[in-house]
Image (cartoon, rainbow, N blue to C red; front, side, top):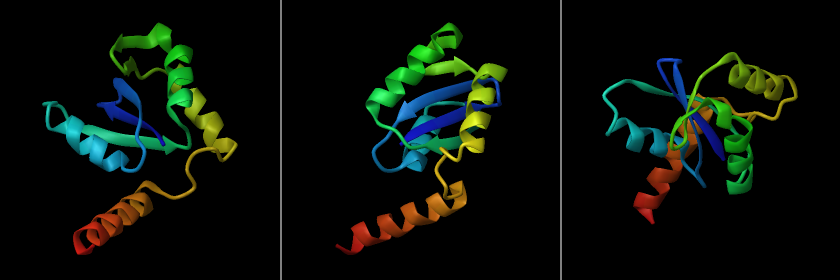
Length: 107
């Protein structure tokens, strides 16, 4: 999954995770004094992540952090219209992750 994590709608981190974007959010939040939010999640692998980094390289701040501009918002809106953004809501995704975490503890 490719995640977009925002910091006050000014910056966005475009990253990849195999399973848990909320785990990634939690890890990033631990080293960031500003509140971070999971903006959205789309289907994708590391190759797709690299394509997005290249696509938005003119907005690069540092690492995988970019300025959150209309260019990125427009891209995400196009995905929403084409239904490429993960169909499940972020709350549903969070519930699925909690269930998986509970199962891991039992096993």
